[in-house]
Amino acid sequence: MLRLRPFKDSDATHLPAWIVNERDFYYWSAGKFTYPLTAEQVLTYAKKIAADEGAWPLTVLDGGGQPVGHILLRRADYIDNSIHLGFVLLAPEQRGTGQGRALVRLVQSYVQYILGMRRLTLGVFANNLAAQHCYKREGF
Image (tube, rainbow, N blue to C red; front, side, top):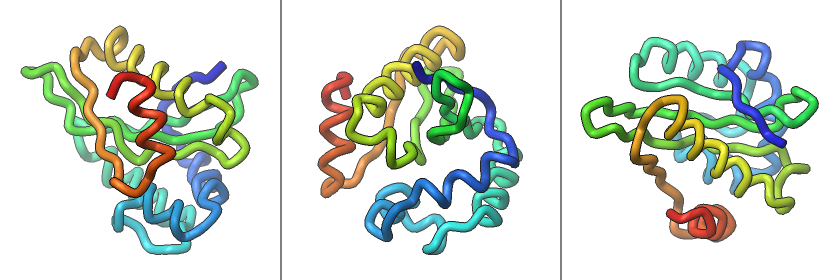
């Protein structure tokens, strides 16, 4: 079981550990960070996002409450009732286990039932086939 909670500064140390290689870093960061990722970069990013009224980072927790992932919801549009999902990252041990699909379903429910949004958008690189497969299986 996965859960979502607001990002805390203490979560910053986890994200760099979840980036296993430069290719995964590129897929995740889309050029917005410098490789290798550091906790300081994550904290700077979190501070910038905190100033954006239409965006917030969330930490993904496992059933025991341990951080195992990260997402960013942004570009909240309260007129069109839509929001964009980005910076999706799961710990390496969570990948390939169905947890990615579980996370997408969790985010869809959160967006619909907690935020009251009707539409969730996302972007994915054309060569990130694993992510594309996951999102397509969940209706994107």
